[in-house]
Image (cartoon, rainbow, N blue to C red):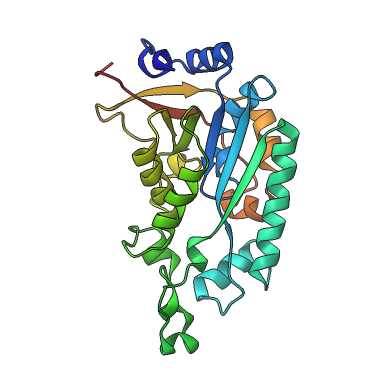
Length: 267
């Protein structure tokens, strides 16, 4: 594992793949939502599948039964005109299982609530009239794509759950946090604080929309993979509840997968 973190004389993801396969290293992909691992890392996962042990840990995989905020209602409608969030998340879990079963990947769903559905520990009487008062992130535009709320209960919950999973010997892939979605930021921050054998992945498709793939920032070495786009798109299309919202024209744009490996001793 020491070599994996130190030896990247050129930005070539094939070196990462070669070393993982040579050493049969277990790879764990931490996915904020039930599609992010495939969206951002599907090409790499296809390269590694059935050659070494792969696990996807989906973090935010549930919702409450209502009442819903306006942003949550819009999300339910955009995902297939769902009126019940539990039905949507069950559909999303099944989509993810079908996609990852095709790759032979192990799946763990942590069951934490999506940011749109996270309530404050202490609810307000006003929340009975306007649900936004009782939610940690009351709106998508102004809160979910903003800063992580320091009182978000998911911060402590995620740390506890990841610590229980004994991932010390695994190569852990976690989101860089491109796009500022609080769930991606939260998973990125907790992962950076917990794991030494960490590879950050640039969040697709946020990265191409913003033309921001992340920065090496003196701490990381950037590596790239050109995925087999035809095969990756087949995987992405399993996530039909989210596909239209992600790709309004029905087309997945060509892209590279971008990863950042933390440097050791400045190398």
